Amino acid sequence: MDREIPVILLITKKNSLEGVYVVAIGYDESNYYFEDPFTMGDIGYLPKNQLSNYWKALVKSDSRLLQRSGIVIEYTSNQKRLTVPTVRPLP
Image 1 (cartoon, rainbow, N blue to C red):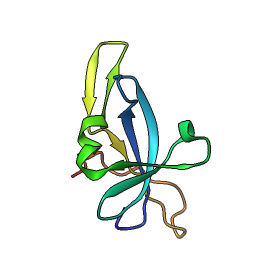
Image 2: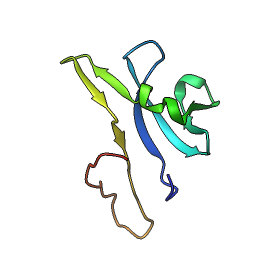
Image 3: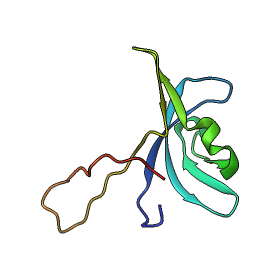
């Protein structure tokens, strides 16, 4: 996000391990801010000290718990095609 590239995160709903995708669009000293389809057009947020509690989700097909799963897609206008970066853990 420091490079102005949104990050897609898989987080859980409150009181559940059911996952939902949100797009992390920014942060300040206290919160992370998200575009979230569940908020119906409003910008959602999570306090920084609570993100680790929700940044996980249960994969129902094989009962795996994914933690700190995210997607970053980088693209520059001078590229002829979209390149997918190497998958790496987020800090």
